Image (cartoon, rainbow, N blue to C red; front, side, top):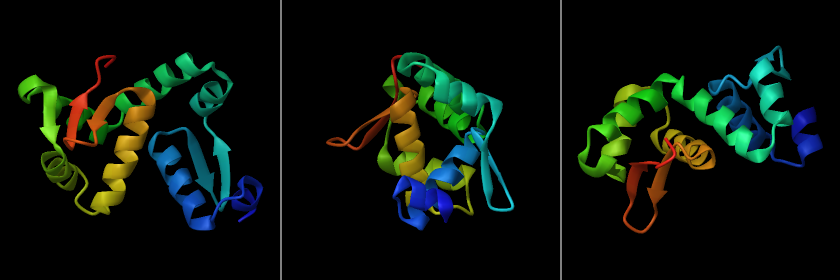
Length: 130
């Protein structure tokens, strides 16, 4: 609750951010306390271009991101429809909330230039920098 208050965020939104950061191994939370992992500390102190590279490396080490990258590299032009990507995410993370997982994967991927997504064509693709 304290972190949500300090960040002026709703508690639920704060939990979503914490869960995503835990998934990326940037933070850890024990008994309600959230602390930065060494890579998280490095990311927070880095300049933006280095920060994106560090996050991109973290993404590549996480199985769902690695499996999606492998899937997309096997697709024509390294692109797939939103529906195809949702099906893959459901396959890789069967017990997760599909739309929430898709949004989290998409947002982190866009930030780190790992994957891209065209909202008009609903096409998910391997970013050129990856």
